[in-house]
Image 1 (cartoon, helix red, strand yellow):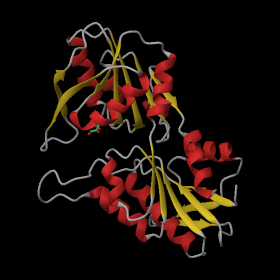
Image 2 (cartoon, protein in one colour):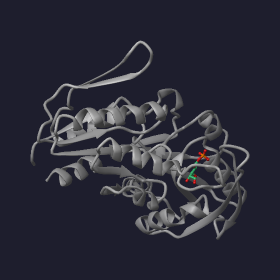
Image 3 (tube, protein in one colour):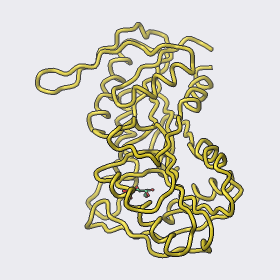
Image 4 (cartoon, protein in one colour):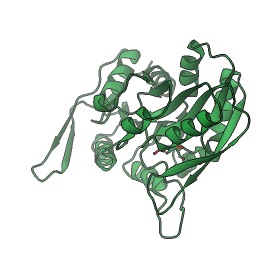
Length: 304
Ligand code: R5P
């Protein structure tokens, strides 16, 4: 493998360290401090000239700060003439704002893509971008990784009998179909309704398919408030499933997610470490699997 440097922003240092360990390197030295007025002040302390340089940062809560840190680190690095500058984004905040749901709203995911480009990132490695079309928001090459294989591996270890993969909404059908293929199980779709005038609120309505007497394996990209998974689990139980297992790539776990997920009959939840774990949000039924091997592999292929 050629020489390269991997820096970590402050949002997910444990994952960056795990990736560095897999690659057999140590993380680059960057000092991340703030001025008295709160402005972020990154200082890249290694010589990056003529090197392939990667910055790993999850654009998770507080996303606006983490985005700013990423952008400023990019600017700091590009001023020292790297050979190539790569953004490694295990979780892309704002990705769910990938379209205008009504006039007067931004297409925020596209704005984030532009931010990264203006700070001179020349390539991106990202994980489960909510919608494949987001790749097209970037004018630079994107390696789009999926956590489905890693999550399916965990589900397979359970030896589920009579399972069915559930897409909790129509938008997730492609993801669920791929997950069902990996698990060699049938797939069922649920119809979810969101309310534009009520943020983060959803209701699961209809189940399109037969689930009675089966183990339901819900697959989603994000668990944020936990509402989608909780409503789905409730409706599935009412429809006669024996067990509910939930899988998702990004553990946003916002607000009262822990309480919401505790209040419903979900047996196990599998998440990944694309967002650094907040111990206060963790529950016994949550199992976290690491994306470090996959990210390390993508980086090795990229740096050649
Ligand atoms: C929606 O399109 C996403 O795929 C997730 O289903 C959603 O963002 C999860 O959010 P929450 O946990 O707040 O229901």
